[in-house]
Image 1: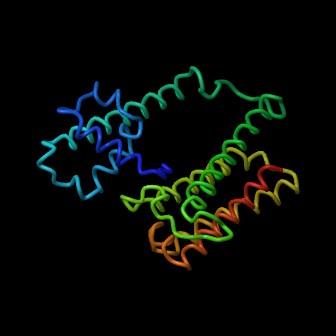
Image 2: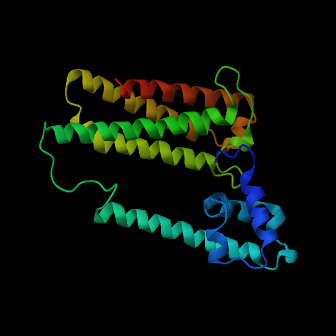
Image 3: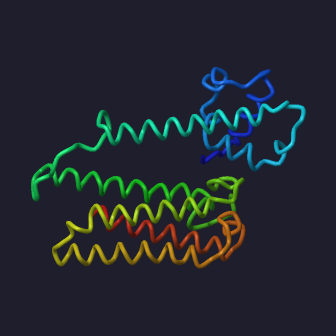
Length: 231
């Protein structure tokens, strides 16, 4: 995702029809789009695979193996983060005002901006094509098959808000920084509240004029937030 060319369906369908059995070796040599959550979502929610005797249980085998692979990758990342090694957060205490502290805060801010940019560009703008001339592109939205795109979007927004609150707010102490803090908090809260106030799933929002207006406003507000964070 974004899957503009419907690669998930093409690759999963090819994997199921071109192999007599689905095992770890077959999956390891398959396209990455057939190995993880996208494939699991496709197999669970695409009706053509809910009851296919012709495939002799291969969709279930693929779903089980793909889910196991996702769990294995996630566990490996968690262990690497906690135990040290490449990409892990450094151990030790950072001295207040030190270059190490400044570098750590800059990295947190960069991570926050990147996360919000993904929400703005891919999850919101990508689903309507353009902020100036929005049109419905529901198949470009995240998790449209399972109708969980809005939940994913809100989870990322709330995660970004937590990162800001716990990682950056304690260090925003000057009057100017306090103004920045309030602005970011208010704008992130407004986006979340507006999306939660509308019960429609993301695909339904995209397919209505009022819903697209909400998506446009949310994306524009996120652009404003990132502008504040980049100062």
